[in-house]
Image (tube, rainbow, N blue to C red; front, top):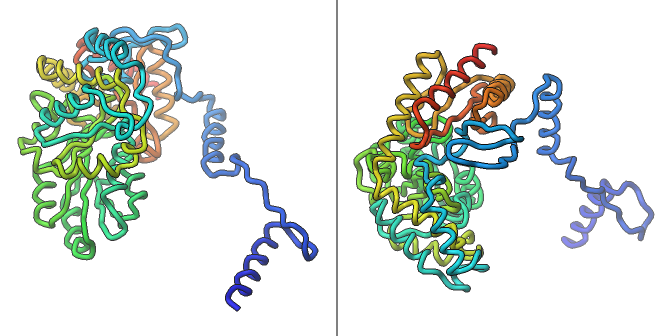
Length: 428
């Protein structure tokens, strides 16, 4: 009887798709088109708005050449502030040479997972030196920073667990939360009183609890209150994960990140996430922490187990970059000096830098989407190439240009960028 009932319901549903049909006739199904997807329709809506106001898309520009602090786009040289080359390592000959040497020794690709294809000594050296630099037991390399977050959160958390996160954490963390099926709650940006209230209300209902924050927030340019986060996670028996993708090489006197900046023991944080594609002039990501965590991930994280090992050239580049940071801490001091200069000059010119603290990433907030896009086009036409971020990357009325400073920029170049930006802002 149950089977008959199910078949009737199925037939009724198929009938809605295919219309009425004679008994025994094969059902037809509606055709599926990618153009019917909400995402496609949203893209077309944005294009229509842009066309209405005569504003072209600023995204997916082709970089024809990069040299020093400049890029060539459509044959025109632009002063570049769009790359997260915080310590200028992307311009460092020793990094490029390390990549070439790695290709000569191992070839361009490892071709399969490290678990089955084997590992290179470079993988072990970089993992060891990252963990030592951060001050924790061990680290594990991933071919993508995004995959590192997704795989780690998706592997260690389950539907029995609770994840509480700052509202501004990166998309990669959000996707990892969805994969985990854990109960997920966000709290207002850097509002640790709200985090405490959520922990009091919800922690006891779940087996494990993970709190996720960032060290240096890449859209706001501000830092987290790490000591407060540690106190709360310890009091409520939770794990703390810090995404310090933009903190490595940027925060702290010697660039060791938010732990050094805050003056706390890095081992008090359960999970460190970082990227190789920002300061370290490479590609990929890592998770670092105690040896138990790394052992679990090494055998279960799908983004590691089922993915090709980090390419030898990428591994060698990051390793060379990390060694330069350790040998030349003056690069970090120079970056900090540039950040404070940017903030003071921006204030003089009446530009809104929000809650930025002056470490590496500098926002200039324009307002709504159209205003932000127009500002970017004006600045770009003026010979400066910043990064643009608009909704949904930031709130709808908080579109902004992001200037990624490097230790290799000059004070004159920073002043030039702000002069151009202030002039274009005045036109709006």
